Amino acid sequence: MSRVGKKPIDVPDGVSVEIDQNLVKVSKGDKVLQTEVHPDIAVKYDAEKRQIEVVRPNDSRIFRSLHGLYRSLISNMVIGVTVGFTKRLEIVGVGYRAELKGRNLQLSLGFAHPILFKPPEGIEIKVETPTKFSVSGIEKQLVGQVAAKIRSFRPPEPYKGKGIRYEGEYVRRKVGKSAA
Image 1 (tube, one colour):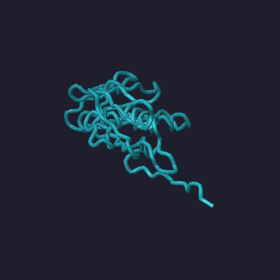
Image 2 (cartoon, rainbow, N blue to C red; image 1 turned 30 degrees about the vertical axis):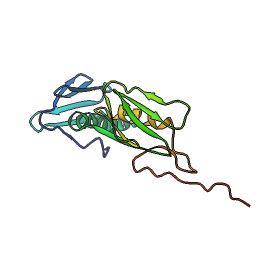
Image 3 (cartoon, rainbow, N blue to C red; image 1 turned 120 degrees about the horizontal axis):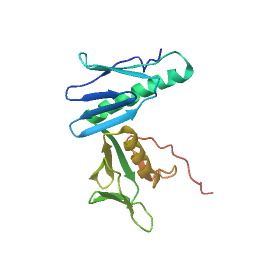
Image 4 (spheres, helix red, strand yellow; image 1 turned 90 degrees about the vertical axis):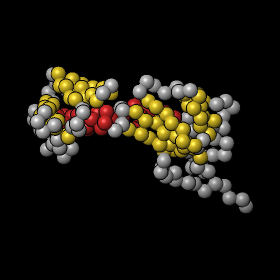
């Protein structure tokens, strides 16, 4: 039995869950997330206990892997509509900075031109200081993808550590050339 898949998902007050055949829809207010589940995986919602349970038909390899996957996806949907997800990034380097231009993020990363990043719908970017900013939203996968895209503009390099990194990320440093 999957350790992840067998745990029930607690649904907080104010969150509504709709299960229509293989479509699971989780909503709270104007925040709505939905995912399509494999037709053989059963998703059951107990309104009395306010719990969602994911059940697999048998112990074949494919269903064991899908069991934990769909439980995690549905759990992330519940967390997303209640709390949301945030990735914090920091910029290291002299003259490197970030600022908001309307809803867009403008990055000065040592290139000849500034980079203007337009976040997709459902993603909010906040700049706390010129070198620290956060990406937040209700969809975990989209928040991580946007944060990775922004980091890819100037990933941290191993010699001086300059670039965009996640908050708390360790960059393994290398020793440069030694003068003779």
